[in-house]
Length: 160
Image (cartoon, rainbow, N blue to C red; front, side, top):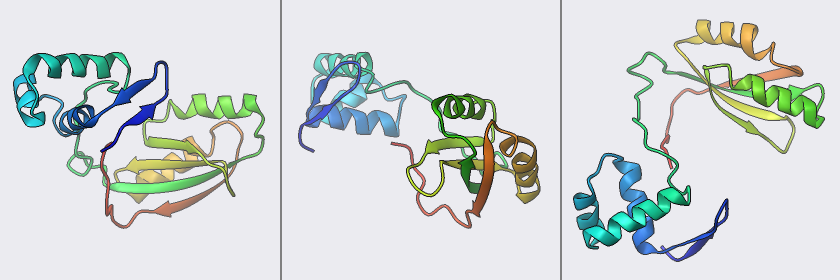
């Protein structure tokens, strides 16, 4: 991978060692510095310094466990197009804030197009989804219309 500028709170230039670190820790957040250094072919001290630099620059924002939603009984995925009746900034902010309190909404994206938001909703089954749609999503601030697309199979689903 070539060099690329990442913008944010501070700019940081990433090189092939940085990308190798990012790939390794995204696959295994519990990797030891010794194993990481060996994997990227760099000594331990520079590897640790690079990792700390990536964390300080917020390129790495944290480490989490990856859970299997199917084993947790959450295999039903629906994508919901949401149109708002008002798209002024206060309405958008009210919707954005309210979405944070609906645990079944796994992702929420503001969309430029025929609708305002696209939600990824994960539930146990269609009965549970209908309840979430009717009781939670439809009552979010300024929601005027929804359209649901049910996922039949997750063909590719991976973290960054």
